[in-house]
Image (cartoon, rainbow, N blue to C red; front, top):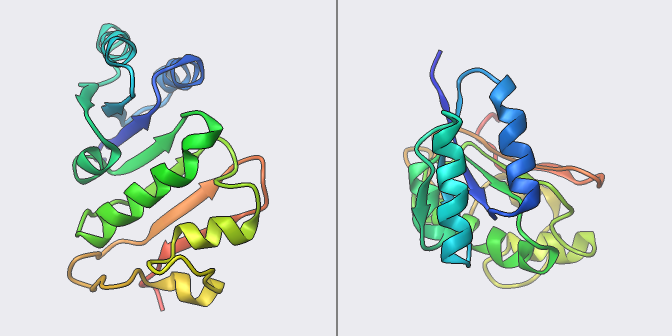
Amino acid sequence: MSTLRLGFVGAGFIARFQAQALLQVRNVEIAGVVSPTETTAAAFAQFIKDRGLGEGRIYSSVGEMVPHVDAVAIFSPNYTRVETMEEVVAAVNRGAALKGVICEKPLARNVAVTMMTFSSDGNAMPHSALSRSPGASLEAQPEPVTVCVSRTFLIFSIIDFSY
C-alpha cells in the first residue's frame, strides 16, 4: 500500500493536535507545511520529524506545496480559508494531481461564497459545474479531487471524472 502524503496549512494548536492523532494511522505522512510564521512552521516541522510523521518540508505558499502532496489539510484560521482554497484550486488547474482536501472548518460563511471559491470568474457555480475544473483535462487530472468539510453539510467533488 502506498503512503498518503499530506500537506498541512497551518502549524498551530489544531495542526499539532491532528498531527499527534496521525501517529495512530498507518501509511500517512506529513510531507509539507505552510504557515505565515517562519518560526512556527520550523517548530512544527521539527515536531513532525521528531515523531516520525514524515519530512514536514516547509513551503512558502499553498500553491508551492500542492504539487508535492496527495491531499491538503487546512488547519489555518477562519479568515484564511477562502484564500487557501483559491490557491488549491489554482494549483489543480495548473496540473497538480491532488487527490483531496480536508478542511477542519467550513470553507466560508455560506454556500454561495463557498461555491464562488471554485469559480474562475467569481460567480457562484451550480453543483454540476463543479464536476470539472476550468481547463482541466483527463490526462492532467486522472484522479477525482474531493473536498470534505467537517462541521457543515457541504461535501462535494471539485473534480470528478467518474461519469
